[in-house]
Length: 160
Image 1 (cartoon, rainbow, N blue to C red):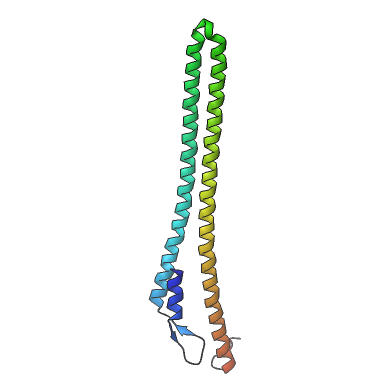
Image 2: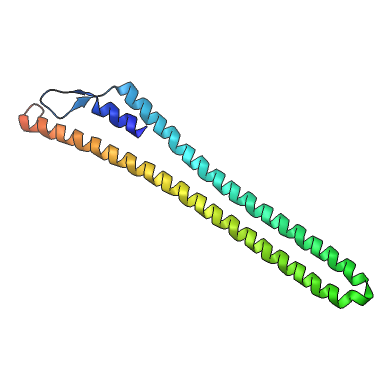
């Protein structure tokens, strides 16, 4: 869209003896409206990334709870057998610890992925906004130069 805006200005009709040009107001406003629509899309994408993070964290917690629950059930069954009581306690602790380690690993992975997605979304939004700022500054400079030229040639008095 920024390229279209730039092309519109580059191909605009020049005003003779000035650095000004005439652009199609309707087309220019249409491009600006499209930019307004595109930026909220980036915000929606960031929200989706955040929701995905929350879902991944919830899934990881649910999986950890399931694993811990299974481990506790196994431990309870093993305790019922009197000759395996000590082995059952040790195995239950290992299962619980493994479940916690796996839950930590899943949560770490989910947080890393969310961080990367958020960083990428932020970088993309920053690039779009930087490009837009550069283009707008170019146009502002062109307008300033045009006004200065008119003031120099005396065709438009400087407002008091």
